[in-house]
Image 1 (cartoon, rainbow, N blue to C red):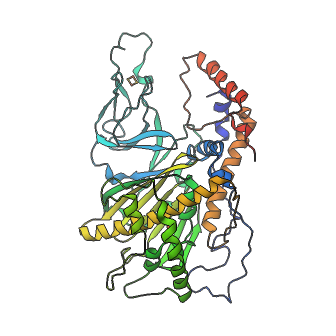
Image 2: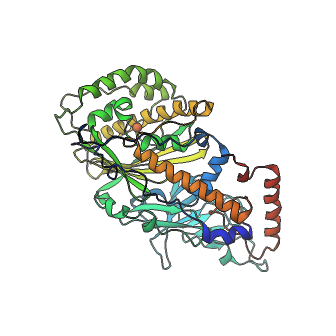
Length: 498
Ligand code: FES
Ligand SMILES: [Fe+2]
């Protein structure tokens, strides 16, 4: 990190909130039950999506990493998965490998800690497995060992090395926050200017209390690997305008006309009324739209070539998965698989969702790999004591909906990549959630780019970067050579065209 980067830390600004974005509430348009054509004011057309290049350009993607992913509170997991000291899970988000561990000893005994998965010796990953239990973590390169507090406990044959101080070689810590409901978040920004969690997501903790997370236990996880930008998935997640057409199963579980998205503070609440047993509220027009969509969706969903389920639960080949994306056979008397609870669904800027139903809740984490590659990770937690059949029904219900979304993203991204399409209209009410989060993305990217231009001559400022040891006098000078070469070769973000 250059001196300018360090100096500019205090001016790093998080994505700004904008109260001018119309929510369904502020627009005065009730998407829920009770809205009528005669009472609703006219809708104003006008807002467009961000330009398509933001879905495939690698420079934009790298800028998003610095401006957003390395400077935001990111949801990871639930604390109930850590039962004993040394339990750990490893993660990778926007290129950063890290792990979360339940610590033992010291002032913070039993607390969750997050560390970069980077050995302080020569950068080999300290943790190799996705999960495990150990209060001593030994690097498999040269054998340095760390305790669950991240402290270096042993560095073979370094005892006699003059000037070497174990206490200066602890694992790099990552800021972590656990909500009172047990939701675990991290923030990669290594500076002192991080917006506190409760200010970042002001009001979120209160809303999460509507759901009893303690009554649920971890059930299973699965992953999908998509050939699309992370925003391609978030676009679909942030609206249900597509649901009547693309999700026939979901369409029979919820009263789609009641679906609405309400932007809050870097998060959005999604609302819809569940269909109780025996109810069928689908309007004739909606039925016609669904019927009309069946033909096109059956042909469009045939290209899920890179999808794959793994982890626990039902494993499906891409072909089987695609076949199951057809409307499910409707059992005449079966209960709603979503349960009898209207749900607590929350989008968490930038890339996460927490969706709570009656029989289970699940998280979706949309993990950017490159501009056009994204991993989707789903963790499912089921209600304690429910039977296996109910769990399986919920998982099937969820996987079907998620696969339908996955297929939409695959084909959408292919067209975005071609560059013919540049931007499209967003519906001011039905797609207000898309508008909200895209504006957060836009504002964060522009602000960070301006910061890099004004504070660092157009060279990148990465909030996640941890300054090197002050003992190494050469480091800044050598780092400066690298930065100047980036500038000369045109790889710095100052070359971006807008
Ligand atoms: S890189 Fe870990 S011990 Fe050398
Ligand atoms: Fe969807």
